[in-house]
Length: 277
Length: 277
Image 1 (cartoon, one colour):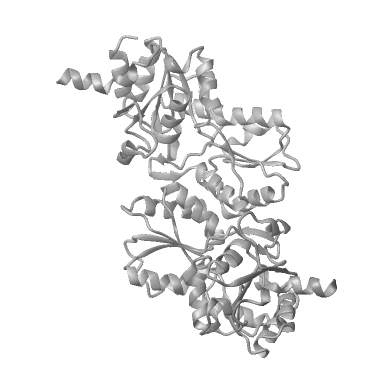
Image 2 (tube, chains in turn green, blue; image 1 turned 180 degrees about the horizontal axis):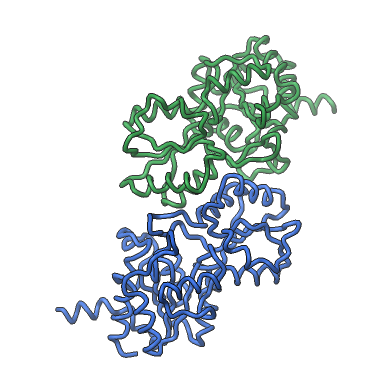
């Protein structure tokens, strides 16, 4: 009975291909953000180390847009994580690429900490709006300004760095960029283009960077829609941790069912490494 | 030819019943709001006077929620309008009624100017959220607080004082409450209950207050969806003015077609009074 239970719980770590790599969400999986930089989730620094020692490939796939990738990685290293800049996939570098390819000049509604990512980008006479998790910068005045830019364009283009509803900080749940994306969509009667999770291209670029196929990779995240659902749509197995923004009702989500639910990242890694790969 | 044109333009003022009353939107029809109280739209003070002199009944049907009804009416009188308190239908008194009937204790996310409307309402231990056009009070912090109240309720109840996308102030278009309603709907995966236009009950209570039937009343507004579409769904004819938030593309709206388009309120009243009723 015990054995049957363990086996059932661990179905997710037996994808069609042998597991060769892991994609990890960061906020709510590695750590909870908040005042003073946030705090690591119990066992997570050790879990990342164990993944690497087991010679599994790993990439970190985040919708974090409150800081440049450099600053963000530095913070995580400071919190004790073994993480390198080129292992982290974040929306800002992805949107920079899009802006360049399409000749778009953004009006930015983002966190002050993200601004340096756009230093080289022409922002004069804007012909699109880019929004990220701007937090306190989501004032009425700033949202109104972004709206006025959009409504003044013949074909309004809104690029959203993620579409999350909320995330967990150490002092509670906080509204995420998706909420303001929806607000601007409604105001202008348009549909935003999402850069970052759950966009397929975003997951696939991280998988491809490991030299793997989606069925060789497991996604571990705390967001049932953007982490789990997004990764599954790319052909990965995906597990939800019961940390971060996880809520028990996620396990009865109307459209997304995770391949497994685990207490936290350490639990996921324990199961993963108990199974030969 | 000239006669045919006039006749075609004026179809809207020949409803099935004889026209006995007029419902007027206020912001964008009577005046444009803004710094210093706003400015009357050319010809509007005179137009209201002419409606009353012609013995047409009139009610003002507004989604204005930046001030108490008393303060709002006083401002309009100061701008030169012949308008009385009991002629004005606004969302705050309507939502007060709902709160009382259903035993709801609101967390308020509204303009400071509206707060006195809720003086008598128990706001302890809130079991619902009421949002109005809070303007600068729509800070990240305040929206997040409203979200946290909602997400903490077993059955989140969100009452929205209107669902407008934007309105026009003297210095440009401004985001309206509907945008933040959509934001909270998305954040909590719920549907708000709209109090005010375009809710049927709201229009019908104003019509009933005149002692008339919907087909005896013409609605005149600048919002193609909330004024025109809402009134039409109640069986009224409805005309859009080319003032306030009007935009030329409104005349090709995918789902709502006004019964007529006029340059402004004065123009509408001129046509109305040229036809015997």
